[in-house]
Image (cartoon, rainbow, N blue to C red; front, side, top):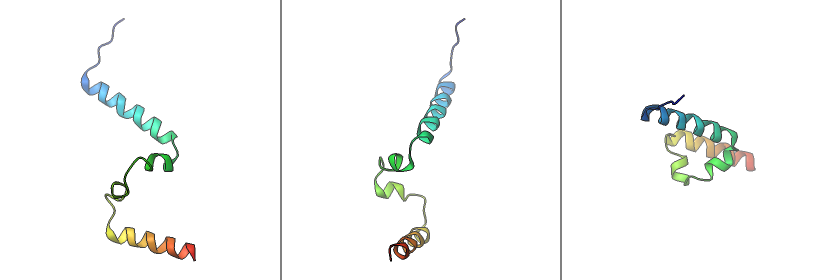
Length: 60
């Protein structure tokens, strides 16, 4: 039995495989593949500042 897949189906399958592989990896490993500015995309300046403040307090 031969099954034909449409390009949209292949794309959807690829996304599912990607999600499965990435979700199995440690966050640090995934994030290390991105530049710092790419990691911060989507965060507001306030969110970044709050995180930095929290980390500074934690280091003291």
